[in-house]
Length: 220
Ligand code: DX5
Ligand code: ZN
Image 1: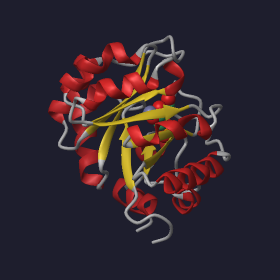
Image 2 (image 1 turned 120 degrees about the vertical axis):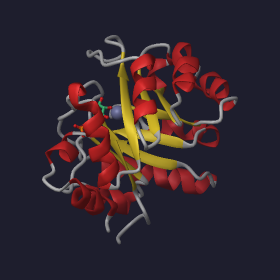
Image 3 (image 1 turned 90 degrees about the horizontal axis):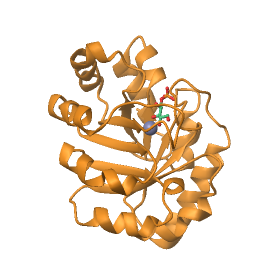
Image 4 (image 1 turned 180 degrees about the vertical axis):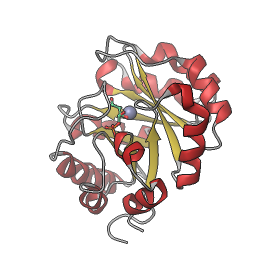
């Protein structure tokens, strides 16, 4: 196993057929993936609309795996209580979507869930270094948010390396997650750069053998 030991794999439902959701959740559970990634989109922060907290609550109820909410919405603080109430175990909001990220993180501190920030490809890693003491996870977008099935930004590998160095220097146990265009062609470089978790949609649902695919991503 190269790079990080036991990299986690979280499966994004964005591209799935929601009329088959129960079957999809079972496929994901059987694949050995660690969690479900819920892409929440408001049509304003990103040019797409997905689903809200009531659907998220249904998915949480139906899933044997823990669920993470990736909020690609403006004013994410306004939705924190609803998604915590939906039963997600992790909530990530975009640093670009609020002027007060510390205040937003403080709001989440009271809940017992993992909290973190997501960072668009065009946002510098340096902008989240001051937040490292206040987050459990930093999600580095390797595509522009809003859609599944996009091409991976190769520059993300260097971004992971820079963030890993910054987290190690600050002595914080930050989980570094990468989201967008992940597949077997870029996973090893990302693992070696210090990635702790992959968020995958398209490549998972295209895999002929999902369990083997997940093992490959984990570096097993
Ligand atoms: C994009 C979402 C990602 C995306 C990942 O805005 O945040 O989670 O759905 O899907 P793929 O693996 O298809 O890029
Ligand atoms: Zn996502």
